[in-house]
Length: 273
Length: 324
Image (cartoon, rainbow over all chains, first blue to last red; front, side, top):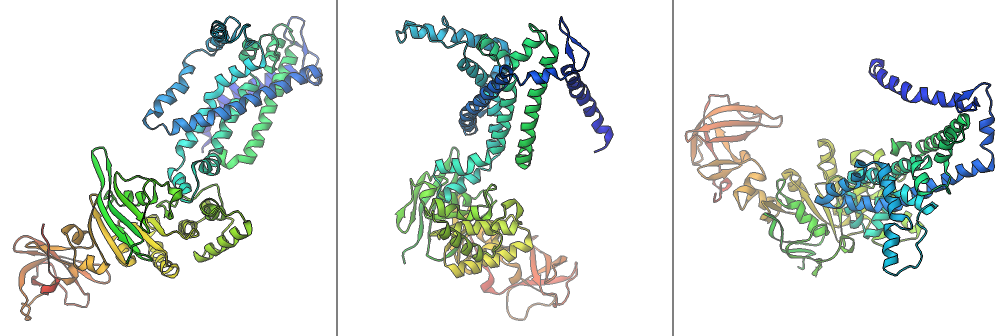
């Protein structure tokens, strides 16, 4: 393709990607200002602080939470996508229902979860008045609530690419498998899931990345008790007034994601791209 | 003789549309049987009902006298070669060919599996391609994998759904000959679906012609071509001239500049056009009635030029009287 055609794209990438990344990188190497902001001299101190067990632990926990959320999205999203792909004329309705939550703000939806999960929330009120429990269940402000929020928020990003892969799949392959003696479970395991791999990989990437850096969900549903990477970064830029460290944490998160994606593309290059 | 596969008045009705209308057929053991018809005639639906992908709305399908109705495809001792081959793209040739042995025949021993797969690949001349993926194969090779994948199961009936239609014409003719030779060698009953009359005539022991969901005629290629039961069959199996309601094939239609001296009835005509086809010529002539007849003329024959006054005639036995 001619350079003239790619120039707008290159410019967009430069303004929206390269320049901000450069700013973050430079900030992460400077010293903190007393009231926020950055000052000289250049230092690697922000990076060495990342090895502090406190911060390394937060990054590790974030990775674990994001991984669990991704696995739950995989396990819940694949059957849902399969169901929609086989729903015949109801397909478009179900797809619309999957996309429907995007019409409201994520913040409002997270508050709705708080309304459901808190001690005086809908779930506890119903269980209490039905006599199932005596004390309210601690549903909010823990990792469970964070996972519920993350899975709820990012499940559509799993369902949509998996659905697209299933939809493209040659229906004759399923008939061929049955013809060759495979019962439905064997067809699912030996044919459908392997052929669905690109969709499952794409969905996992789309869920894992935002979960790793999620700020809103852990902050609201986790309360103050569950500090994850997103909250850590936010804290550095506000309360802690340590912009260089905040920049270093976000840069490290980005590098982790980049490394993961590169490894994935190397391995799955053909099917993913 | 007890037939191997029997269709008894099977129908497939969709809302407002009868795809297959009371089709009855009996196919014998070891037969190469073609189901011929234009697209949308119900031949593929018929095949899919035998394979078990569709359930008939009425009638019965019997294999060795036992009804297959209500049995899933994986419980039927037939196998299908799909039009687009439907090879599993994520499995190698070996993985594709052994798929049925693992699932339908429940074979687990890898030494046995490998031996059987190698034998099947040798049968279709694909030795050495076992570790390729379908995407790395040519169209003809994919076709052979699809064949091997089904044949390795030694099904009672092999169902082939227009398997040659995706190949280019030269390869199609070559595969046609190979397929026929293969079927003779292994003796498996073939039910072959096609819309290509030449394919059906050259391949089949017997064939059935379908139209509009109904069976028009069943017979040997000679019977169906030479003694078509209906005007549809006559027209579908080859070109046909219609003169006063009688049908004559172009190759039976004779032209001469002089009145034929053999006593055959002849009709005066004027040559309209002559087309050179390589091995012969097709000469179109207008009859006084306004009907146009095509005669297949040898290129060693006297040339016929447009505008020539000619006599059109044929042997009485070559004339077909078919009700409209």
